[in-house]
Amino acid sequence: MPRICLFPGTFDPVTLGHVDIINRALPLFDKIIVGIGLNTSKAPMFTDEQRLNWIKEIYKDEDRVEGAVYEGLTINFCQKIGAHFILRGIRYVSDFEYEKTIADANRTLDRSIETVFLTGEPKFTSVASTIVRDIIRNGGDASHFLPEIVFKTLPK
Image 1: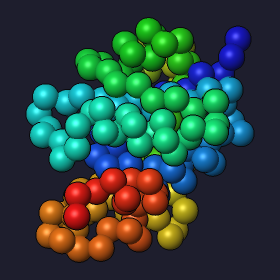
Image 2 (image 1 turned 135 degrees about the horizontal axis):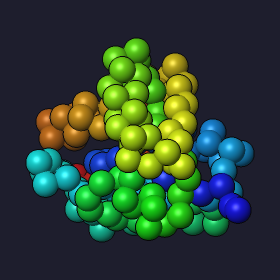
Image 3 (image 1 turned 120 degrees about the vertical axis):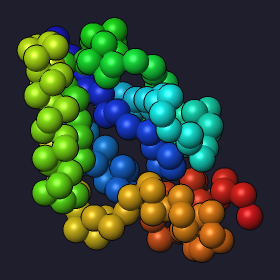
Image 4 (image 1 turned 180 degrees about the vertical axis):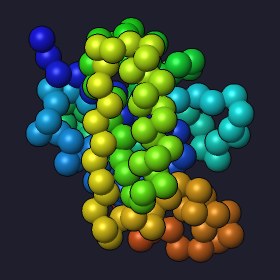
């Protein structure tokens, strides 16, 4: 059975921190699906199509990474795509506390799906999509936090 992993998030925008987690997870899984979750309580800065295109472009030469957009419970999407692993990146202890609560709930819903945590590289711990969006909105230089393909497509 292939080791299929879902890396869920909003990826609004895709950051170097996201790419770091995906790249370091590649040796662990046969396929990583970057799941762009649609959350009705959040108003994203970028369309789901744009975020999906970024994933496709960044990983155009890596057939083990693909992007997908989904709604509803992450655990249900895992079941739909045959993923037995959920990948989450951890920057700080507070991230772990929050993510562990979600992992525990997911385990209650489906014991066959395991959550795997990877800690981010120290140089990416300050890279959060919320901060990057604020930099972009205020005309700052977000290039330090974004893959080149993402930065190039931002409105000037």
